[in-house]
Image (tube, rainbow, N blue to C red; front, side, top):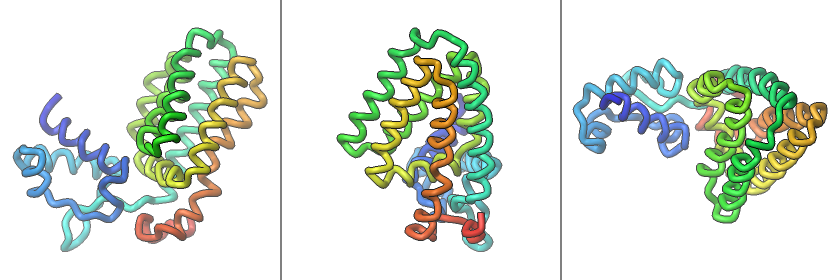
Length: 222
C-alpha cells in the first residue's frame, strides 16, 4: 500500500461517513499537514476521488466534497439491486446454515449500535450482512464493485439512519430477510429485498427538504 493509497482511503472514508460534508472545500496543504505527508500523495488521492465522483473542482475555490447527486444515487442503487437480487436467488438454492453465525453476529452488532446510537457502525454491519450473501454465492468481485462505486448511495443511506425509527426498521427487515432465506421463501425474500433497497426512493425527498445544501442543484428532479 502506497502513501497515496493510504491518503485516498482516509479521505474516502471521511467523505462517505459524512465527516467531510457535501460542499466542504478541501485544502491540500491542510490535509498534507494533518496526515503528515507531502502534497503529492494528497493530490493523487484527490484525483482518484474526482474520478469516483466524490469530489468536484470548483472554479476559484479549488476542490470540494461533491454534493449528493440523486441521479447518481439511482444509478448506483440500480447496480446494487440488480446484482443482489441475482445473488440472493443463488443463495436460495444453497444451504445457508453454515453462514448463519456470521449473519447473526452482524445483526447482533446492529442491535448494539441502535442502543448506542452508532449510525456509522450500524451501516458497516448492514453491509457486512449483505456481503455474506455475495461471499456465500462466490461473488466477492461483484460486492467489491458495489462497495467501490456507491459513494453517493452510501452517503444518502447514512443520512436516512439519522432517523432512529428508520434504523430500527432496517434491523427488523434484516431479521425477516435472514428468516426467509433460511426457510427458502424466495417470493417473500425478493419482495423484502426490493423494499429494503428501494425505501430510499421514499425517504430521499424528505432529506432533500431537510438538508438541501447537501444535494446537487439539479437533484430535486431526480
